[in-house]
Figure 1 (cartoon, rainbow, N blue to C red):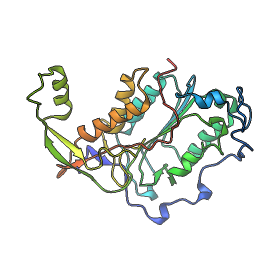
Figure 2: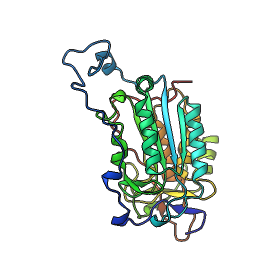
Figure 3: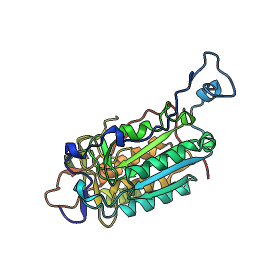
Figure 4: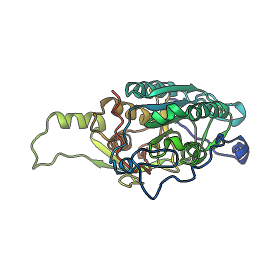
Amino acid sequence: MSKSDQRDSVPVTPEEQTSLKQGLMTNGIKQPERLLKKEYVCNSGPGTISKSHLNQDTYPINAGIAVVINNIEFKRDLGLPDRKGSDVDASSLFQRLQELGFDSDLLNDASIEDMNEKFKEIKDDKENLKKTGCLIVALLTHGNEDSIYMTDVSVKIKTIMDEFNATNCPELILKPKVFIFQACRGGGLGRGVNRKVIRDPNQADAGAEYDAYDEIYGDTIRIPNEADFLAVYSTSAGYGSFRNTEKGSPFVRQLSEELLKMKKDDDFYRILTRVNKRVGMGYKPNFPNSGDVTQMPCFISHLTKELYLKQMN
């Protein structure tokens, strides 16, 4: 593999897994006695949800919080290589989130304690959380199928996300919580097939449309085997995620570009689907014997409403 294209994964040993004693703090928040009353009320109070809020098809976002965690160097005993080029990803993503109006923080080379402290800071400011309409946490680091690395330990992805669930952070109930992972999810290489792209002889020349297509994909299109399944990860489960040591990762680069071009009527699903297409069919790794290697991003949604991020500016 060339120096320019690298993967964000290494084999996991039992010693590298952390116990829950080193896990994230839940801050002792108890679950509300009732999350939903039998009789809906217009004004939500503790343990209640208004019917009008439930009936909305779109998440209202007047304020948002974003945290970008960018890990490049790790403790030596983890045996992890430096993630050169990740600073490019962190800078572009952080800038996009700021432009969207999110109150954004960037943590570089964060330990488990650093992440705990940041999450605790967010959760302790309950008045600010009540006004917050959306939370975005982006983690750029090494990883495996169900865990990611801080600079000193590995942490289960579920443990991280559970910090802001309905029990542990009731102030964010019915508010979108977006987690973006630029990390490997295994040591496999995604494979696909090459297909020649031809113009439809019955269709008039689209001019600029075809020119733009050729510029992105060239004269062949590499269709990943994982494409067209609907299950925000930079790669599919079990596979590696690539990063260029100078340009950053194709996933974050395409995500940042789509966020920059995003219109107010673009829901987030549409943005992620565009990223899936651009990375999955447009990115071709640059290392020996990579002729059929692909990277297919994916996302698993538990959202209950449409998410439009461009509401605050």
